[in-house]
Image (cartoon, rainbow over all chains, first blue to last red; front, top):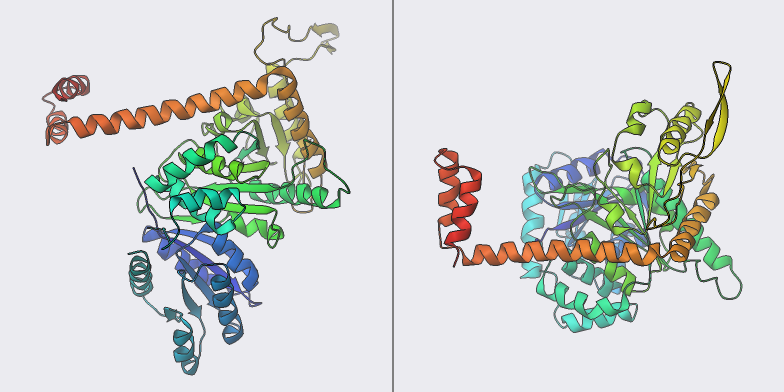
Length: 135
Length: 355
C-alpha cells in the first residue's frame, strides 16, 4: 500500500512582498496532484534549506522579484548540497533578466518561469526532472 | 522513490538513532509512503519509542492552531535553553511538530501551509517540523501520522505536537493518538449549541480560547464552561427565582478508569504569546495526572490497539483481494449497479468465492 507523492517547497526568499505568483504556482502544483509546502514571505536561504531538509522535498520553487536572484539562488543551491540534498530540483519564478538565465541554468536550476508561463510547462518540467532523479 | 544511492534502510534507522536529520526526514517519507524500507525502519525503531509526550492540537480552521503550536514549541525551547543544569524530567528538551493539512479529494494534491506560522522556530536544531497531507483520511490526521510520530519519538524528540487539519465536529482521531489533546476555540465562531454538540469538545484535555484579545471572548469562555459543567458538575449553590438551589457535584465512580480530570479552560493570544506559560503548565499537569492515575499506560494501550486493529484490517483486506479470482470484484460491482444483488449478497458471494 505505498502512496508516493511529489513534494515541492514553495518559498519566497528576500524582502519583496509580492507573493501572488508563488501562490498561483502552489495552487497549480496542488491541482497537478503534488504536495506543496508553502512557507510564505521573507525566507532566508538558511530557512529554505532547513525546511527542504525537514520536509524531504523533491523540488524547491523560489519566487524572486527583488532582483537579488544572483545572490539568493547560489546560496540556496550551496546549502541544499551541504545538507546532502543535491538531488533536490530547484526552479525559479518571478522577474529574472534574460542575460542571467543561462548562468542560473548552468548553476543547476531546472527552469525559470516568468509571468505568463502556462502552468502545464512547469508542472511537466518538475514532474520529468523529479522522475529522472528518482529513477 | 526516495532512496538515495548508498543509503539502505539499515542506514536509515541507524541514522535516525544517531540524530542524522537527513536520515530522519528520509525515514519519515518512507514511512508515510508505506514502503518496505519504511516498514523495516519502523520495526527497527519501535523498541526506542514510547518515551515522548504526544500532544494533539485540534480545533476549527482559523482558530490559530499553527500559531499556538509555534508559541508552545518556542516556549519549551527557551525554557530548555535557559535552564542551567539538568532539566526536570517533565520538561521537554527537543520538540517535534507534525502538522497535518487536507489532501484535495479530486486531484490528490495538497497545500501544506502550517509552516508559515512557525517561522520563529527556524534555525533551532532542537526543533523538527514536518508537514503531512491527510491523503484521503477523514479523521483529522493522516493514517500514517501514528507511524511518523513513532519515528520522531525514536529520534529523541521528547515532546511531539501534532496539529490536526481544521477540525469541526467529528474529526476526533487525534484523541486516540495523543496523550494530551488541546482543543482550540476562538471568539465569534458559533453559538453555545455548538459547544454542547457531541464530538470535538468531548475529547479535550485542555481547552484553549485563543485570540483572547478579541471581543466576545467572555461569551466563548462562558459557553465552554457551561458545556463542561454539564459533563463535570462542581458542587455549587445558586439563587433561582428567589429560591436557593444546589448542585451536589458529580459523584466519582469508585472504579472510574481514570480518576476525574476536569479540563481547564485557558485564554491565549498566540500572536504575542500571552497565556502560553499557563498552557504549558496545564499540559505538564495533565501528564502528571495521567502518570499518577495509570491513565498514561491506558492511553498507550488504547493507541496501540487502534493501530493494531487498523493494520490488521488493511492486511486482511489486501490479502483477501489477492486471493479473489480475477474479475470477481468488478463483476460484483456491476451486479450491484444493475441491482441484481444487494451489497450484503455481494459480500457473501465474494467471501465464498475467495480461495
